Amino acid sequence: MDFKTWQHVFKLDPAKEITDEHLERICRSGTDAILIGGSDHVTLDNVLCLTERVQRYDVPLVLEVSAIAAVAPGFDYYFIPTVLNSDNPLWIKGLHHSAIREYGEILEWDELIPEGYCILNADCKAAKLTGAKTDLTTEDVLAYARMAEHFFRLPIFYLEYSGMFGDMELAEKVKSVLCETRLFYGGGIDSANMAKKASAIADTIVVGNIIYENIEKAMETVEAVAETADESLY
Ligand code: 1GP
Image (tube, rainbow, N blue to C red; front, side):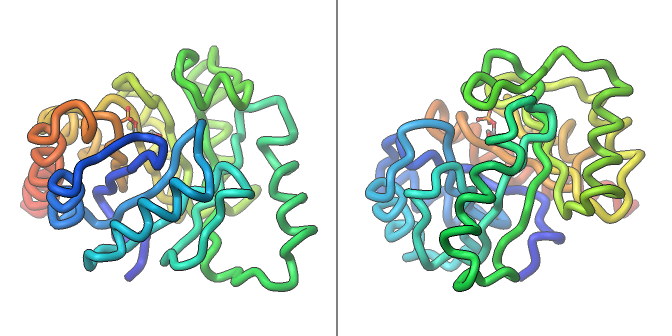
């Protein structure tokens, strides 16, 4: 199992309710991984509860860490965001420093995967929470992508539009300046069509909200990504 091969990921929010039936469909959908993460009301209790339910299925499981107090054992990877377009050092390296100061001696560094986030939807919770500067030009965003790859050498650059479908022309330009660093795209993928558009550009697409709004549409995104991958072979 290697996150560098993943094309489709479902992001489950531990603060949101999901029935056993829907969770089973998500976990057995053929997605490459389940990512557990959210921006608010993430607690150790709700992370543990959801983790235990997902662990019944044979699917790679990742915790995207947003609160140190809600870190639980038992994940294949721990994705650690650093918000490159925030001006608040807390979200760039402050919380990371506190966590490493506390747990540095016992951390399994191979399981920790840093993600360079660039949050571009001003209205999403993550943008508000982290004070992300979203009014960026194309050149600004490309510079963050290059910074992620060549300066910080981050394995993931995450273009985050949570809640809205983003600018695919911009995503395409971002992809064109990345080599080793994987482009993750998330935001507003709520149909097979959107999934195809995003996965034609990004290495990995992340599907979140639609899981809770329309499970059938969420399931379609998995199939759509597989079809896009097949088409790109010819
Ligand atoms: C959120 O990028 C993910 O962090 C997915 O976005 O919830 O809009 O699908 P959506």
